[in-house]
Amino acid sequence: MRIILAKPRGFCAGVERAIKCVEQAIERYGAPVYVLNDIVHNAHVVNDLRAKGAIFVKDLVDVPAGAHLLFSAHGVSPERFEHAKRFQMEVIDATCPLVEKVHNEARRFASKDFTVILIGEEGHDETVGTMGWAPQHIRLVLDEADVEALEVPNPDKVSYITQTTLSVEDCERVIAALRRKFPNIQGPPKADICYATTNRQAAVNALSSRVDLVLVVGDRESANSNRLAEICRAKGKPAYLISTADMIQEEWLDGVESILLTAGASAPEMLVQGVIEYFRQRGPLEVSESEIMMEDVHFKLPAELASAH
Image 1 (tube, rainbow, N blue to C red):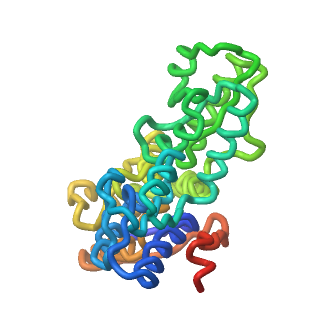
Image 2: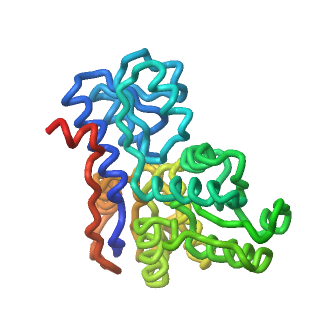
């Protein structure tokens, strides 16, 4: 068997920063530290942090007054900050800076009384958080059919923003549909889909044609991991999303001699290595890494943690 390891893969700067936030908060303030929602969409990461003393909650009513509270990388609405302030919680905001950029765009367009079209998945943590920054102005769409059904008060005052973890190609199609319907639509000065999502998609686009099968390490909850598998399947390449090597089914491997192995932006490298070990146990294995582009992005810790060094 031959495995090509896609590079870049795995953790992005926003995920690394969010995990570090939880670890440093526990180290500095002691357990428990409360986290609203999963800090990142990966069960392995969440369970590891839980074992260290993090308590993950879905609702702020489950957080005691005065507790240390982290907001996840996906971001939250301003109401969450207000609730935390009301109950004197010590907030550490681990929102990814690239998600925060989208929040700022939503506010900027809303302040000019634009209808803001958010391209994103209904119910996703990031989308829910973004909509909270301009609830009276934002309309959510995911595909061209949603665009077709859109009605807005003033077609000349329309803008768009996007969830950061969408398929680049799908998003471009939706933006093109928006431009056809609203010729004067305004968008962000720089694309909202984050560098890590874009780069991981570029890697599978470049490498998937060289193999018989694609395996993507990531959780079902992870939007960017799902996209990687969907992109390959859309090209007619068998692709499976697996959270660990335990999910691999032998029938997938019938007649397969080469595999592209990658990982979503919230999947730790140890899970990728676990997949490689699975194939080593099966027989002779050749592993090579193919780097499509260099990544060297790092984000500073939030002021609440950085200032306490």
